[in-house]
Picture 1 (cartoon, rainbow, N blue to C red):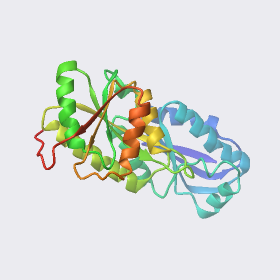
Picture 2: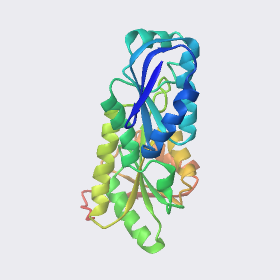
Picture 3: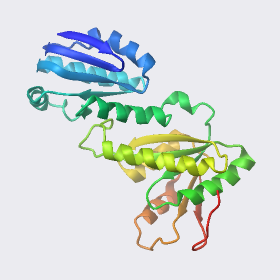
Picture 4: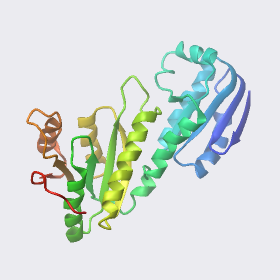
Length: 266
């Protein structure tokens, strides 16, 4: 097997008959220094993978995930993909994308929104605003601005991306990632109008409700701030999430709701 690298991509060529992760690891670690959000393994020139060879991918995922980064496998030939499907535990854990461009866009979202541990410096006990459909982000930012002025606390916008349990948690999800990027950009523009500096993160979760509770715990939030839209109905599912926060939020909870048809100036 031949291994060569370029940019954020490790290319494999030939047959993968045994676990080659230790051979690839040094090159991968060098790439991660310049691309901490993650790397891509291009398998377009891979001809055959044995069960032992497939362990290369599992070991790569374990090491790279432990380092706080991601790995995405691209351009798997159909024959190789079929071989991987026949090996227990491989296909279900392997984040696969159809192209380098799609994989890179997924990894870049993590980088662009500061979703790595080093970017949390100075973000102790933040005010968190979850970007979830059904909440009034604009009004939440208005409330957060007033709190932050008094407390000097940082404000963090978090988009929770729900990943089906049938997929690896790090699997590229182009449509959801596009929605996350748009939501974070829109909320960032709202915050900028009032000169409010915010951190922006994407968190991948299996379940929205439990995922939000885990995120609040992970970031050691001082406040979680949610605002309800004026048009919300009593049977709206978003109220289930609000009720869960009332009962189980591990931090202070602020629930806002603007007056009907009131304009918010930020």
